[in-house]
Amino acid sequence: MSERNSMMNKFGSGVAGSNLPPLDEDISLKKDSDKDDFWLHRRQPSTYIETLREAVGIRSISTWPDARNECLRMVQWTAAKLEELGFETELRKMGDQDMDGKSVPIPPIILATRGNDQYKKTLLIYGHLDVQPARQSDGWYTEPFCLTEDDGKLYGRGASDDKGPLLGWFHAIEAYIKTSIRIPINIKFVLETMLESGSEGLDDLMMNQKNQFLADVDLVAISDNYWLSRNQPCITYGLRGLCYFFVEVECGSKDLHSGVFGGAVREALPDLIWILDQLVDVDGNILIPGILDNVCPVLPEEEALYDGIDFDLEEFKADSGVKALRYPEDKRATLMARWRFPCLTLHGIQGAFGDPGAKTVIPRKVIGKFSIRLVPNQRPERIDKLVRDFLVQKWEERGSPNKFQCYMADDGLKPWCANPFHPSYKAARQATAWAYGRIPDMTREGGTLERLLLLQEITGKNVLLIPMGSCDDAAHTKNEKINMENYITGTKLFSAFIHEVGKLERSEL
Image (cartoon, rainbow, N blue to C red):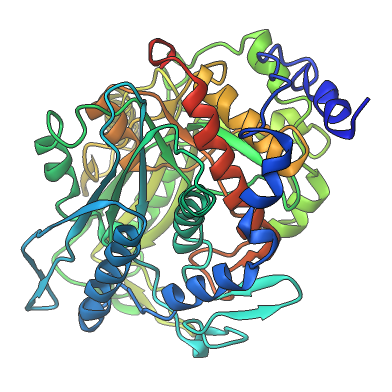
């Protein structure tokens, strides 16, 4: 038996106990002899690294007004790369916005298309070109906008979030072109440079393009997330939603001196602390009645997905830096607590003295902040009502004469959960198995990607998260990096995924 067939026989049963569809034995692009020619990165990884070096060198920090020209340069650089790959690109101007009292331009959004064959499926890839602020003085080992290679890792702001993964898609398409292998699908990109600043203008543009640019989309892929572990690839099929709340208690018109007024007035801060203490018990369980009513029951098929996931509790604890986990010996319970069930987190108190040293002040008004992460079947508007009704009831029990109000920050973000048994997920598993030589874990995440929900609702099509980066890439923090192995083999994964999508029937999508 050939090494390849032996490998695929091991993959054939899918994830142990998961009942996922078995993988196909034949996942070659054309035939085995083509593979060495196809994977150009085996001969020239330096070319891909240099391209990433160029991208990282552009300081596309959307939250800095003075960096907007760099954001525009990033858009133009990216559009030129796409045009070299045969894409028709359109730069949609988004106008200006006010930042720190001055008007600054919003970078254009790139709409790019390669292929319009009505008999081919169309894959839409979403990504962002802007990055979080970074200075070497923040604690970086190296200059954050100068890509630095060290021990198989490529350090630089945007290397993993999200420039590296986007370039992986570009390199995958380039590999088809340079080896004269037919690209089996139409491909589109929506690329913004404002994600880190709230995606200004994207929602309206996507709604306007529903029956135009987005009309023929069959499938949406996003690579703006990460593996659960350092070494095991994964495909992500679920995210939690988010409701963010403010609780205000006001006791007067000005701050007071505790030596003069302490003991004689009804203070706001004790009221707020008491209210916040009603939200969760000592184990972190939510005490608000009705919060768990609409949470979907865990089915055996879903439960089995957790069994084979590569996740080390001790490593997770060490990485988090906490003293204790809620479920120190139960991997499944820990993962479900992170992904599968809602949680309530207290974030802080505004208005109370929090600086170093001592200050004997009675604050006139304090604002508590907390959030609830939502799971499928939970609706933000329902959670909002449950929370407000509960806190109003508790305030009445408190009997304080102080002024009280609670409210949700905005409309909230819905949770997202796709069907991991969908053919597009089989295609992603198939491609990952080919690229990495092992079956990916099927994972969910505890965070939220608002743009994913937007694209799913507008297109009405399946969305999947197919990450390139590792869990320790340090996106949004100092010393962001991407492993060279992830960058190069991730390109191979994206190439194989394009091939696998081409094999699907449109009726399956």
